[in-house]
Every structure is written in structure tokens, then in C-alpha cells.
Length: 322
Ligand code: NAD
Ligand code: UDP
Ligand code: UDP
Image 1 (cartoon, rainbow, N blue to C red):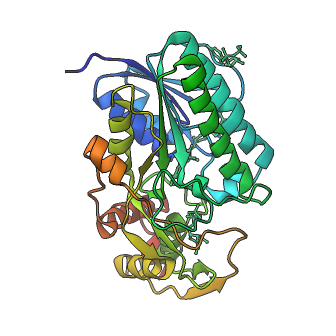
Image 2: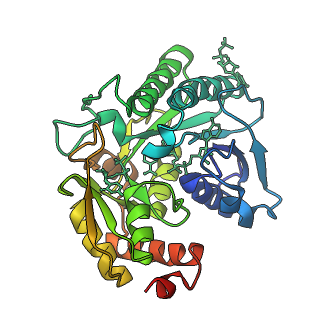
């Protein structure tokens, strides 16, 4: 077995962070979960609290943090458009000041550090699918820019600390990921469609619904993140992690309706500003370096996510609404 490590997960009480904490604890590591609970919750990690190897620290990563750890996964940042646009200045601070503080921490203690970057660094891409070598097409002054440019600047900081201070860095570019523990009010398409379908409310399709995304189930994504952290020091990324199977939002809506057996109608609403029309990862690099690729079909991942939301919304919600 691998030597047990002390691992810091920032944003550990969020959707992805809570699954990551769970995985690292299951592997026998000590985990410190740092979160300011902006979009995450104690509920997401409630089942881990009894584990003596688990610790929660309420802290905002825009402030310095002094702890002793071997590895850092930097996930702290709201990920859904409605949440990251709620206080855009704080979003940029979280990405940029948060990266500086966590890099400073990694430098002081000699820890490996992984950044949860995003497909949003490609903006509304002209290259399809997007390989890591593509520099992107990002609006620097739009409503999504606080997130996109914050994450781009964080990547810059990671590579500057690597060049300037020889830090051991890993940068993952995560594409749309879904699963249990997404917030019902998160505003992302998978949670919206499932919650709407379970309540027989109209399914809100933005624009024509012909825009595409590729959806990765959370367990597959966590495999990729942990795999990337364990690569040799010369593997820095950036590395795309996501599912290359692409769907239109109309197709997603049909699948959710079929799996829930819902009677919801489709309601077409305006497309948000700067909403990318196509997004699909080129995952050749991850396949080659990690031997990784997603295994969960959308249909199966959605079924598990629907089960979760049925519980969260109350066991009677589906029937009661019918
Ligand atoms: P999430 O909103 O569920 O989790 C983010 C967590 O960070 C939350 O627990 C939140 O409370 C915490 N947080 C926010 N600001 C903070 C701050 N200043 N200090 C400390 N904690 C703070 O989102 P998620 O989907 O779990 O995303 C996790 C990471 O992965 C984010 O960095 C996000 O940008 C990245 N990512 C996610 C996706 C996806 O599809 N889920 C795609 C690309 C990138
Ligand atoms: N930092 C931190 N924890 C540490 C070490 C540093 O939060 O254990 C923060 C510190 O506040 C600093 C930032 O990380 O502002 C960057 O640190 P670095 O050593 O790179 O730069 P400097 O301290 O010279 O600004
Ligand atoms: N979307 C939609 N209906 C919703 C929520 C989102 O049609 O209720 C669309 C959104 O316009 C985008 C896609 O679904 O084209 C994915 O949106 P999400 O916010 O989940 O992720 P992102 O845009 O960051 O990829």
C-alpha cells in the first residue's frame, strides 16, 4: 500500500471536493477539508466527520493558510454560473488570491499541488474538440469573465511557480461533471433538468437547445484527478479531464424525461451571454499518460443522480407532483 499522506482539499465540502475527500480517506490518507461554505455544505461531508483522519477547517482561501501537508488539491471556487456571477469580484479573488496562497503554502511545505481548472479557459472555442494546446477564445470583460479569466490567471500562476520556484504542479482542465450532491438550486443544466422533471415543471432550455456539452460522471472525474496527482513530477498538465461523448441540450432533456417518466414540457428561454455553442474535450493526453477514460454512460450516471435528487427533494415529491 502507498504511504499515507496528509492531504489538503480546498473546496472540500463542495460537489467534487466531497467525493475527493471520500476517495482519499478510503485510501487511508489524512484529509483536511478547507471550505468557506459559499456553495458547499457540511451536509456533503457529514458522513466523513466521524472518521478521525478527517478534519474540516472553515476558511476562505483568499486569506493565507498555515497548515502542514504533503499534497494540495485546490478546488475552492464556485463552479455554477449563477453562483460565480453572484459576487464576481470575490470569484476572481478566490481563483487568483486563492491560487497565490495555496501556491505559497505548497512552496513553504514542499507539497505537490493540483489545480482544478476548467474547460472554460477555452471560452467559446473555434477548435473542436479542444486539445490542451488550444489557447481559447475568451471574452475578458463579460459576465463569465470573472470565472474564465480567474481560472486562466490561476493557471498562469501555477506555471510561474513551477518555472520560478520549481514547485511540483498539476493542472487539470475539468469539463462538465455531474452526479449526486450537486445542489438542486445550482443552476447547472443537469441539476436543473432533473429537478424540473421530478417536479413535473417545465424543462428550461436556453436558446434552441442545439448547443452541446459532454458530461462526465463524478466517479470517473475523481479517478482522473487522483491519477493526475500521482504522475511523475515532469507531468504538469494542463490535462483535459472529461467525457468526450457530446450531447445537445435537447438530447439531454429527452433522456432526463425518459429516465424520470416525467410529464414536463419544454420551455425555451433566451441563451445567456457568451454561452459556448460547443464543448468537447480531446482526452488523448489523459488516455496516454494516465491510461484514463470515463467509463460511466450518461444514461447510467443520470439514473444515479436522479435517485439522489429524488431523496433530496423528498421521497414523495415525484408522486405528489403527478
Ligand atoms: P462547488 O461549488 O460544489 O464546490 C466549490 C467549493 O468551494 C464549495 O464547497 C465552496 O463553498 C468552496 N469555496 C468557494 N469559494 C471559496 C473560498 N473563497 N474559500 C474556500 N472555499 C471556497 O463546485 P464543484 O462543481 O465541486 O467544483 C469544484 C472545482 O472544480 C471548482 O474549482 C470548479 O471551478 C472546478 N470545476 C468543476 C466543474 C464541474 O463541472 N463540476 C467543471 C470545471 C471545473
Ligand atoms: N502563504 C500561505 N501559507 C503558507 C505560506 C504562504 O497562505 O504557508 C501565502 C502568503 O500569504 C503569501 C502567498 O502565500 O502571500 C504567497 O507566498 P510566497 O512565499 O510565494 O510569496 P511571498 O510570501 O513572498 O509574497
Ligand atoms: N442550460 C439550459 N437550461 C438550464 C441550464 C443550462 O439549457 O436550465 C444550458 C446552458 O445555456 C448551457 C448548457 O446548458 O448551454 C450547460 O450549462 P451549465 O450551466 O450546466 O454549464 P456550462 O455553461 O458552464 O458548461
